[in-house]
Length: 76
Image (cartoon, rainbow, N blue to C red; front, top):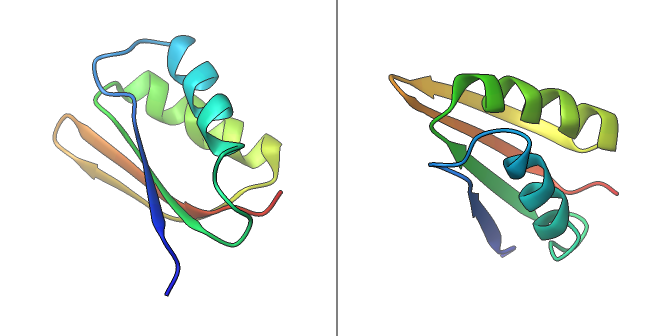
């Protein structure tokens, strides 16, 4: 069973969450699932683009009110 890694950047505004996610993703083993949580819509959209540029797989993205969640698997 693989471990799930959570990166919570709630309360932060861009570009800080991009830096935090980049720094934390390198700690996630390839093939492991990660969950990113934010409460900023602009940041959420930027993170989706950022993950695509990095070549990471996004399996699901959830919008619930002011809470945004990105679920993915580490590829690179």
